[in-house]
Amino acid sequence: MTDKRCVVVTGAASGLGKSIATAFAQNGDFVFVADIDGDAAHAVAEALGGRAVQMDIADAASVQEAASAIFEHSGRVDVLINNAGIVGGRGSVVDLDLEVLRRALTVNVLGTWTVTQAIGRKMQARKAGTIINITSIGARQPTPEMGHYEASKAAIEAITRTTAIEMAPFGIRANAIAPGPVVTPMTQRLVENPDARAAWEARIPLGTIAEVDQIAPAALFLASAAASHITGTSLTIDGGQLLK
Image 1 (cartoon, rainbow, N blue to C red):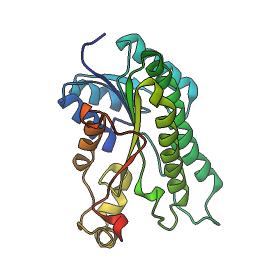
Image 2 (cartoon, rainbow, N blue to C red):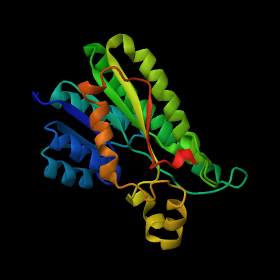
Image 3 (spheres, rainbow, N blue to C red):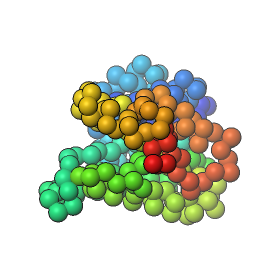
């Protein structure tokens, strides 16, 4: 067991998850880099001085195995960041392949719930911990052909609020971070297309798509003592996009 705060970040081998994991490691925390890609997770964990955990959040057995390994190593989890998720495709409500919808709900919604169960039970037993879910402004602002993804993120916001009220008696806080578009591997096609990027940035009052380093500090704040009276909220980081 380490004396450092123990932080689990899912989907931490790349993109926003990697940036969040890096921010916590630089803060002096011990980070478990959880990802479906075990090799990539190992590389990130080695660079951060943390520990890699292979975890497929859509597979309950994989989640339980990973959680057991985490608790065997550290004895506790102080901060859980549910970041892992997918888009999976695009399509209108009437045309979307239902398998794309099913996969988005399985990974994003069921996966977040499953990880929260596996880690949250131990947090309840200790009566300590903080949970942060990564959602999206898409939960509140629709984009054509992204309804499946946005529905999954709206569900995670609802899960966040329920988690907050159910966990409060145990001294556990649960919040969400809702970014607008962020430069990550998931948005690569958008950001590399000058016309598409310009069209999206025209929707943002501050004029630019966010970088991951503009999102990660919010996770540090919500997990800190400075946020000790904040629970059940969703912190929007979108350059003002929801204002339009």
